Structures are given as structure tokens and as C-alpha cells.
Length: 205
Image 1: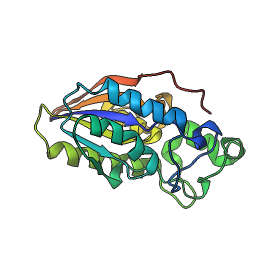
Image 2: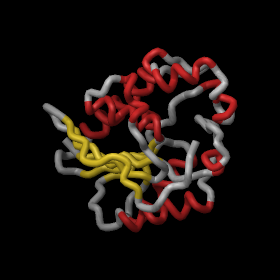
Image 3: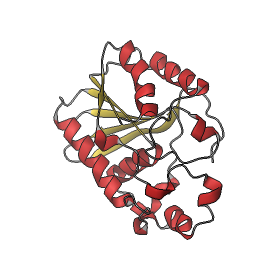
């Protein structure tokens, strides 16, 4: 089965201000984020990618586009790579969210959490795993694919393929513009690297 580069989108102003964008439209990369995207494109320029897939949100597409352009490829939007649906939490600051009872559940017992008006972590995990399985089935075993997504979604995917319990997935770290590499095999999967960053990320909440 193919090898997948799971790449988190680069930085944006919501990230800088400690605010949760969720699936809100119109969240674009800021100046640092655009620099991170270009650094990714340069770092991966000689990597033989067969396809570039992305969450349809602006910040992921904008991170993916320079990488795809450097390879002569087009970015293919994939709804299964979309950000976790955090429902009513969209747009709120992390300072506001930390005051809510659900925050402790999200951090320490995420298997029990459902976001108000949104989805559970288990639903999101099955969504991205189904998408990755669908994409890998479309390619040859030695193909290398780039999939641009979001922090929690990438952590959920990695946790699934490592056999890590859902309640422990928050122990993983996936920073902006980082690359995590998964080889998904028919009998087993291997995590080749986690959270490899091309340039130093900013401090995040």
C-alpha cells in the first residue's frame, strides 16, 4: 500500500490569536504561514509525489498549492480530510473554551466527548481513516501521496494506525506545516516519522 505524508496546514491569524477556527470559512494563511508553505514546497520539491489531496478549507488548500505546483500537480479537495467539526466552539478563544466543563473531557477522556452541534472524536477518526483507505486503494503500493489536513485529524489518523487508544491521542503533537509519514500496509502499518517541521513553529495555545 502507498506511503502517505500527512501535512498540517501552515499558520494563520486564528492560530496566532489563540482562537479555534473549526470549519469557519475565510481563514487564510498569514505571512508566516505563506512562508511555511513555500518552505514545504522547497523541501518536498524532489520528493516523487503521485498526488496531492487536501481538506477543502482555505488554510489547507493554500498550504497544499505551492507543494502541488512544484510537482506539476493539482490539489484534489477531499471532504474526509476536513477539520474536526467542533460545532458551537468555532470562533471561540482557547481561554473561553478552557472554562467549559467539556474542555477537561476533550483533553483527558476524548473518547467520551461530543462537541455541541458537532461530531465526536470517534466519528472524526473513522471519517479520516475511511478517506485514507479510499485514497490508498486508488494508488499503487510504491506511490507517495501528500494529504493536507488539521492537527487533531492527523493525530487521530496516526493513533488509529498505531493502535493507540482514542483517550491517549492527545499525547501526540502535530505542529503547523509539519509532516508525519505513514506507510499503510495490508497486514500492518508503520509510522515512519511524526511532526517533522521544516521551519520553527510559533508558540501555540
